[in-house]
Length: 472
Image (cartoon, rainbow, N blue to C red; front, side, top):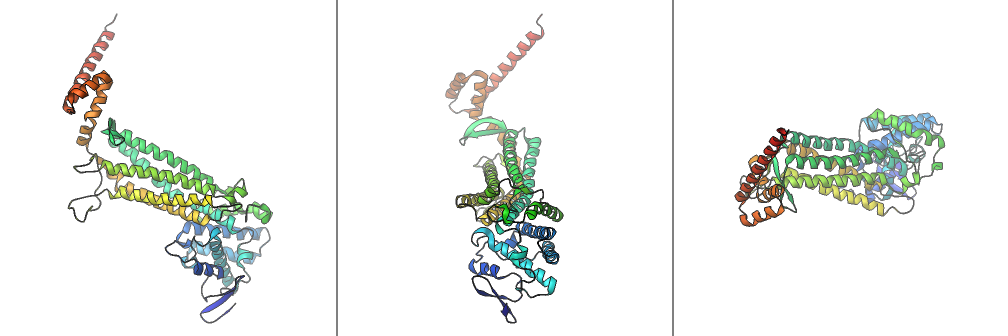
């Protein structure tokens, strides 16, 4: 290493490269920064769940390597202390690499390795950054694991971390809907098929259906998130156990789970049954992405329903009133738009795009290794974040404050077609068809027929009951 007062020169197999003297990362990180401009992409420091998961993997690996006797205790302790400090005192400026830096996530892994090595060396000997002695990024920080298995494992940890808060919001929405069912679910409502009038139901019927659909999809997502407990740490490059020390293979997951529990991240991880499958594809992450995609589309459908049911106030359905939160037009005084349901629709649209991006990575993971895990986890974390934002906003600024228009709904629930359906149930299809023809769209005439039929049916029932009660 050579340089001057403000810079240093590091060398790798590609050649020399100048870095700032006080830059904590090293040459591989700098090459990634130079070669792959950020251009609006999130760097890994902006994904704290993933960064912290990787730091936990590195810390547990150093501890394990010391315990099995393959790493000098002083070196291992310095790596552990460096990781612990970053977990407690985040330094986003140390981690500028983003997901789109070529396949495999190698630049991110090396970014971590270089930072931890430099911090460890400075703590041990006061060495200048870039010295890499006595702690070397690949030989010591990366010992007994590779980018493939360490990043994949961190992806599973990060996804479970992000999923936990998302699940709480969706479960809360289900509870909100059930509360509305209890409060005013008995209110009648006109159902529609193919956007045409159909039969009368209750709001409890409609909201209960939405709640059940959300609960079904949430259960699917929960089961897929649970499957993320299976990780590939110890599979190193392509799934071969023999590429890491057998003692490391045996000991690393207990050490990692203990570290995750200590720092408050999801734990209880176990090794995947087939490490080659875990390296060839990111099936468990993609499964969760697919479940979230379907859940997002269910949320989109519900939000669009709210938008329709609140349409008006004169020329639309006007069945429910949503909380007014924002002026709806710069040109029309008094106009209020359903902006909160529209926000949920937008969030679901963006999430669907992330789901499609994730699905594409399965198509391009050739042969023995799928190198697109950085794209997968970036898309999945963004998907969870955007959907959680949408649900939280929909709950607090719309669903919890919406109310039905009782008079409007009662009028619609007894309009022409629902009344004819009721008449059909009372006196048969043929009779109802004749009434429909004679009434020629006069809903009041049809309502009178229904009232007469209901009265006749009630009288008949009372007479039958009287006869049964007085029969010897």
